[in-house]
Image (cartoon, rainbow, N blue to C red; front, top):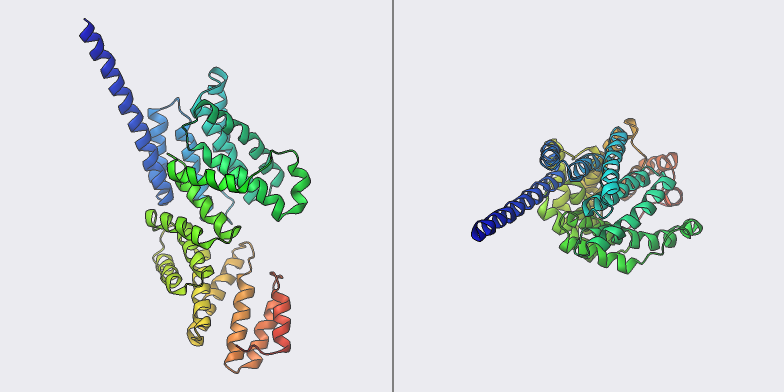
Length: 380
């Protein structure tokens, strides 16, 4: 009888372990599918998670991440915004129902904090700063509570790291925000980076998102291109057909002055645009042509440089016709085309390009630079 009881207990334990492994395996597969941009497969995987584990918010949360990455590859398209917000609201409502009965349910705490965080992230992208700040403020104590319940959960370090880094960085970069930040806990950039590094190393579900944040903050805010490159290489090796990761890899090489490495990256981007690979849209095409033009300009290959800048200009104007948000690309392209004409001895054509820059919206010092070049021809 004792042996029979032991066998029943053991079988129950094995079954529970298999159940956990199945759950983790499905979610890990779905996450990989998201970053590989196989969105239909990811959606089907997370529907299966919701069907097999209806008590867990995980299926709905990660299905929302499918929508988030569809937005990520084309931020100019706002058609999915309301769908994402509705999906995240569903996750928050589901988590609240669970927490009403079980206030320390780790899954409900984790996914509610994550849903608030990503909703706030969308609001910040759309420059709804007040709504973004409120979601960030609401998410932080929930993430702290999840960590208090289970301190071995390294995924929560993503939320801690994002908050700590940006809560110090944003007031430094935008002093006007400082009075508003008095209502928020203090940040700590170094601690935030350490927490993100921990999530990138040990996170079960958050490691790639943590790597993405580290790559972008080292590239954009810290000017530490060596550390940015490390994470860009990690991500592009794992997901070679993700245009967001590939774009950053190329940009980082450019910042490091390594066009030998940057050039193959952008040429590969153009191949993927040509074959209409998912995610490789005109905005990636414009950027690839621009950096190839810049490389050839620096190497004094003026005909090749002009070829690439002309293509980048064409795509830039096409995007403007589609009402894409204006960037500085067109102004920079026109300046380069003017400088190429100056170097080629075509002063009249050069001035036309510089005057065209003045017709564009000011981007940094683009108008000042154009006016200087109208007065005095460009020379190396």
